[in-house]
Amino acid sequence: MRIFVNGDQREIEPATLASALSVLGYGGKKVATAVNGRFVPAPARAATALNDGDKLEVVAPMQGG
Amino acid sequence: MFYGVDLCSRLLLGTARYPSPRVLTDAIQASGAEVVTVSLRREAGPERSGQSFWSIIRSLGVKVLPNTAGCHSVKEAVTTAHMAREMFDTPWIKLEVIRDDETLQPDVFGLVEAARVLSEDGFEVFPYTTEDLAVADRLVEAGCRVLMPWGAPIGSARGLNNVYGLKALRAHFPEIPLVVDAGLGVPSHAAAAMELGYDAVLLNTAVAEAGDPVAMAKAFAMAIEAGRMAFEAKPLEPRDMAAPSTPVLGKAALGD
Image (tube, rainbow over the protein chains, first blue to last red):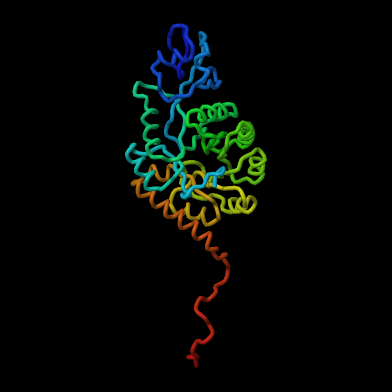
């Protein structure tokens, strides 16, 4: 299925948010996630199924003022 | 000082725009800041730059104040705050809801609404606001126990644009910790804010983009300390006429 990861289109096998993060190389990284503009807490990732067309945001600590 | 957390340093420092991670580290250490601001951004690219940035910040042992920089709506700011709370394991959030992209002027209506939503959800909100008294009052009503009025637009290096307004804010909220956030350029601006009785100063660009950020961090730290000491020493009020400092009494009569 096709999803958008930080704005980029990606093809992945149907997956939960947790397994998609792992496939996309975010496994074990310090990131926070939102799907379609809604925050998904880390403990809920394994139970969150991704659907075709979903917009996934993966953010990390960055420089800020 | 801030939500029950006592700090020694009255300087809060941003972590953006430094020429290198090494300079960032040295500037934070030179500043003596115990709180640094950070953001959340997309973790893209194979290098996963957020991970190395985070390991630098963690190694410094400072408290982190995450921001909602760049958010233009209540929804965006609230969602970002939730992501930040999980990421950094802190209820602190520097709340920015921006309206105008030229001046980075806060959308004070959205700010108050987001502050209420977040405060009710257990966040400890540090709102980036203007010096407007009515907005400040609404923010306190919404649950904020710190206010962060701008000195001038972010990154503008103009100093305190409205000293009268900042003084009025201080006088109206004697019990609320007040931080001048943004717009400062040189240490004398920071000293002036502290002399008004402000509790702290939040800086970023003035240090990060100075020719020597590490020396500038130290200079700001000294100015903030001097300004605070001056405030506690109760400075004179300006007056219109001269007042001779040397006693007139006892002057020898040497005229004709």
